[in-house]
Image 1 (cartoon, rainbow, N blue to C red):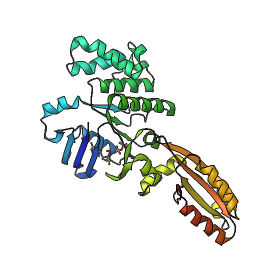
Image 2: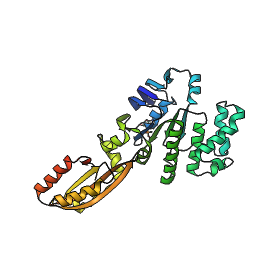
Image 3: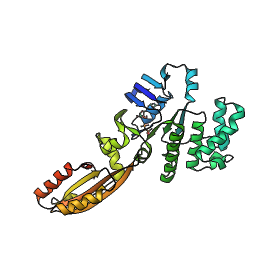
Image 4: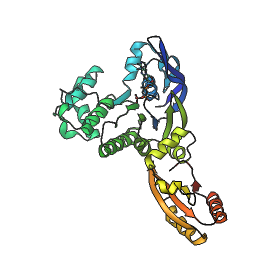
Length: 337
Ligand SMILES: Nc1ncnc2c1ncn2[C@@H]1O[C@H](COP(=O)(O)OP(=O)(O)OP(=O)(O)O)[C@@H](O)[C@H]1O
């Protein structure tokens, strides 16, 4: 199901102070898409997410989910509509003293799910999240990853069309994060679920998001298809996020030496790096030494950076730069390093 925000904003009033948590923002998320919102702490991500299911009332604007304008609904209708918008949280929000079964049962009871169908539905959900053998374990005895699986089962209990994920993997280690992201990807595919995920971690975005919005100071400053956005970032903050995953450091004696020129190139295909370098060694009368290089996969597409130092005649270095600028699939970038 699609989500449409039109000029939605949120201002908090605190003891005579106003905080513009979200400036007027419009956003469309398509049915079946995984949309990521990335930003640093305080950027307004949680506020935006909670406006989608109206856990926060917008100060202005309209929120439409499918054909329903949520901002016009009565409180009662909204409560019912929200059952079709699941949500998962960083801290899982389970009832720790209850078993896995009881945690899911609680949600089904609250939504008046037909009593006789509850055990079968719980079994189905446990299968879906890979916890069929944990039904009678107390939530307090689960690992973080298992707790989030229960969180996902609870969120999916009423067959929602939309799943909102609030820093869902931020409390988990990298391996567990991967397994939860894989689970989210698989339910996105198998159930056709629309997912909106907020995070401060590039790891999450590059793994899962089809499209992404980068947030800063209460606005989406840049947005687009994930690979396109991170291979051609425009806003400084987007560049910062890209740089975060590559984290290239150049030794001071190299940056300080005026004889050396440091060049960073970006390449958009898998084997480009090696072939290209060989060509440069062959065709240019320069000393070229590699300082750093790495390929990351953004939504399964390779995005690589290579940083090298060149020394030689100034004219030859200029010829090299022109050559790089004219080569398809290879770009010189200034912000990595
Ligand atoms: N209930 C509230 N009352 C007053 N100010 C709030 C409230 N909730 C959020 N804010 C403020 O709104 C701004 C955006 O907060 P928000 O939680 O949406 O950001 P965030 O990007 O999700 O950051 P974090 O990851 O730290 O939660 C912040 O300045 C925050 O202090």
